Amino acid sequence: MTKPTGSAEPADIVVIGAGISGIGAARNLRSDFPDKKIILLESRDTVGGTWDLFRYPGIRSDSDLHTYGYDFKPWKHRSAIAEGSLIREYLDETVTEFGLDEMLRLRHRVTAADWSSTEARWTLRVTTVDDAGVEGETAIKTRFVFNATGYYNYDEGYTPSFEGREGFRGDVLHPQHWPQDYDYSGKRVVIIGSGATAVTLLPAMLMGDGAAAHVTMLQRTPSYIVSAPRSDNLSVRLTELLGEKTGYRLTRLKNIWFEHLLITTLRRFPNFGRTQLRKWTLAQLPDRVDVDVHFNPPYAPWDQRLCVTPDGEFFSALRDGSADVVTDRIDRFTEKGILLRSGQTLEADLIVTATGMNMQMLGGIVPTVDGVETRPSDTILYRGALLSGLPNWAMMLGYTKSSWTLRLSNVCRLVSDVLRHMDANGYDTVLPEAPKGMPTQGILDLTSGYMQRALADLPQQGTALPWQMHTTFVKDSRLFKGQLIHDDLHFSTRAGVGPDLVGADS
Image (cartoon, rainbow, N blue to C red; front, side, top):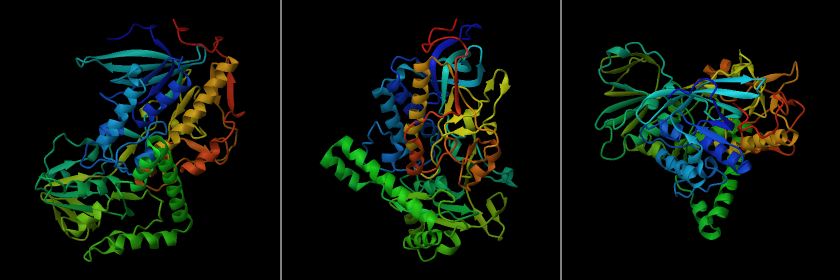
């Protein structure tokens, strides 16, 4: 039901998105500000974000859950590299355990955000769907927005145009839109792509009673693929000896520093990294698979993310002959499969286009400030979280070379420090303003296709503090030491009201 004009609901903080970032942000902000009214909005039917959206076979995290999970809630499952269903359970537990269901609004999609300098408020236009499926519209006026919508378009994945696709007589699926209970048993499957999704799908589709007959991963460019234990036996032992919280904390610390040292070594000594990764890969491949054709990327390690395969299950599928890797380019689809540039035909009953995602900042919202649009590409990020030109707005942008959520605690600390400073001094507005002529650079340092396609739509960052961020936890955390409030954050009192804002709207 649509609310009448002028009846916008007041709030202190609105968190947009109830995925792993939004749930964590809502908990941290509630812990820091128990007396503020915080609303958590989610456009989907349930929480979970990525882990509710993606339902393709084998969906899991490439990051270990001891670092991908929250610092305030131990990961208890034995699997350190966990399936999507386990991550969803963890997020559901977090919502219940910390009482976040009291602030959660499901089926609430923010379609517009308008800042009024006169009121010092954001007015969020929100479409809603009730339990009967009836659509409505409402509005929320809030002092501060924390955007936790992730970095890609949930509505549409990326699929290149393939000549002849309409003539293919089998099924074509994108992993982002996997049909529930889709039956691929006994089918010949070709997966187009070589990223984390393809590496996950290949072994998963060959497991269990409903296994595919054969799976081929068709790649244009090879990726680095590394095997990692599904279970962290040292973590299990630490937990047994020291208890759940201490064991989790030490495991988290161990994994942070191991990952940092590994990435630093591979980046600093790329030739050594190539040699070592080739050696690890060769040891797991059958003789019929040429490591230098199919597992020799043209880029240095960590120019793109390394793909992880738990317990080497990807390589096991190659060894037992149920899967193959083909490195070639597609000429066109045919009735029976795919014709390659080399002249080879890959026959298939199912083609999976694991060709990536479309990046999208702020969940597709284009905020306006006093009626003027401010697109993410127009902004520069203050400590990778606050956007120049956007008052009272933060976004969660995670790491590309470390677990995404490791950055959450730093971003929440920054936001909390800003809000405390505003409350203590009676300010109602904070506006990041970058110095004129400041050099800028991109926020991403990977060459992955989906990132390169989106460069023109992304915010920029500076080359020095406080307008800089790093893409690994250890280096980036150094930027969050000490005082986070800087002269480039301009505080003011525009609306002439004090720090207690809930209820001030009529």
